[in-house]
Amino acid sequence: MSLFQTLSGVFQPGQQPSAKEAAKPQKFRPIFKKPAHQLSPALLSAADKRRLEEAVVHEAQTKAREIILESRDEALKIKTAAEDQARRRSLELADRERKLSQSENQLAKDEASVETAQKFVKDQQAQVQVNLGKLEELKTKYSKRIQEIAKLGKDEARDIIFKSLEKRLAAEIAKSVTSAEDRAREEASDRAREIIVDALKHGATEYVAEYTVSIVKLPSEDSKGRIIGKEGRNIRAFTNTTGVDLDLDESPGEVRLSSFDPVRREIARIALQRLLADGRIQPTRIEEYVQKAKKEIEKIMFEEGRKLCHAVGVYNLPQELIGMLGRFKYRFSYGQNMIAHTLEETKIGIALAHEIGADVDTVRLGCLLHDIGKVVEDEGSHVELGVNLLKKYHIPQEVIDCVEQHHEDKPFSSAEAVLVYVSDAISGARPGARYENYEEYAKRLSKLEEIATSYEGVTEAYAIQAGREVRVIVKPEKVDDEGLTKLAFDIKERIRNEMTYPGTVTVTVVRETRASDIAK
Image 1 (cartoon, rainbow, N blue to C red):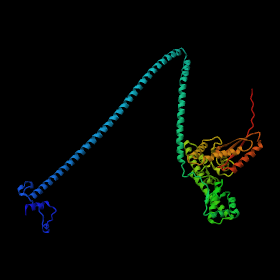
Image 2 (image 1 turned 90 degrees about the vertical axis):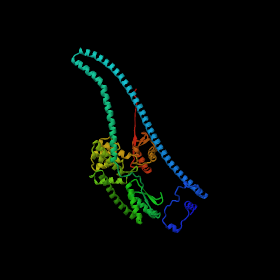
Image 3 (image 1 turned 120 degrees about the horizontal axis):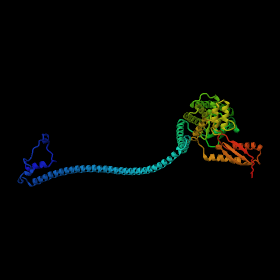
Image 4 (image 1 turned 30 degrees about the vertical axis):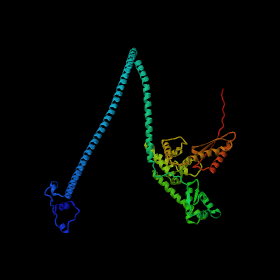
């Protein structure tokens, strides 16, 4: 084998060995005993020389690339180390600058404090000098007074000293008393706020204020014809039996029930729903279902009244009063459910009574029964009706006084009455407790005054007590004493027929005759 063939086999890695040679174990055999670059050029052909040169160049390039890569790695390491060191130096410098800034700020504060202290010391020194001068004057003054007193007797000297002390201490005593009163007033105000807030926490209830309208959904439009009946006999029978007006034309698919009495409205709603479910609507069945609904509502109201009493810790009320309290379930005042209001108010009143040491049981009953007159069907304000009802069942006079005074109709006679009034105001006036459209409220007051002033002889009319009373002033020469009663009756009838209002409206007509003269 020639040298060219040997080198060709070495520098041509793509050449494939024979199958026989591939089967033999391969051993590394050096081709040259000496490095290729030490071979004598005379032994090489031109092609061999060229391949040898290429091999040498290739080897040199490989080593050069390795050296370049190693140099790059080393440079990267050096650069990374330098950047880390620079970053640490930068952080150290920033920290030193921050500490230096803090030191400068603290130094400025210390300098300001020193200046303030120096100024204060100077002021104090000046004040000391002034006080020393005053003390010297007093010393001279009292030295003269002592010399004068030395000439007086013992009793005379004592009187002079006492009078002098009284004059000096009078201003100090007055100042101390005033300061103590102011401090006590501030503490009392803070303590009152704490008591009221704590009472409000005790008064939290699970009820939500509601504002509802009684509506009955109809299964179909044909149901309206059955409700009306032949020649309107069914709707007349229903209205006469329940005392509730039916409105079938307000909106399709429903019937609206209208009545000032929420209990009647609820009885009518239940009876109408069952009549529609039965399908046989006729006067006899209307009366039958209304009677059943009344008995059911009475049971529901008694159970609600019992639950309300037990919720506030009252267990010995007459059965009739418990039933009356149960009517609160269907009674709303400006959208606030009466059971929710009574329960909330009673809890607040009990908490306040515990705080100030008042009679808890009196406050408990006063809060529970304060609005019971709202469910009494009779003429008069709910306060008057409630007082008369409680007297009928021999409720203690202290409780009756709380009910009678909770709207300040009469002066407060006890701390318990004040607590009932405060609890009622807190429950009714808190945000979200009640709802009423202010425009409608203003219109209602204006309408009351407008009705009253429309009569001849009326000079002025005032809607007072949130629209619960109308005070009418008449000319005495146009309305006599007999005409007062008729005028009050006429105004009452117009208000009842033309207006919608919660509770009752009292009409008071005033006729005054005055005479005056001047003594000269």
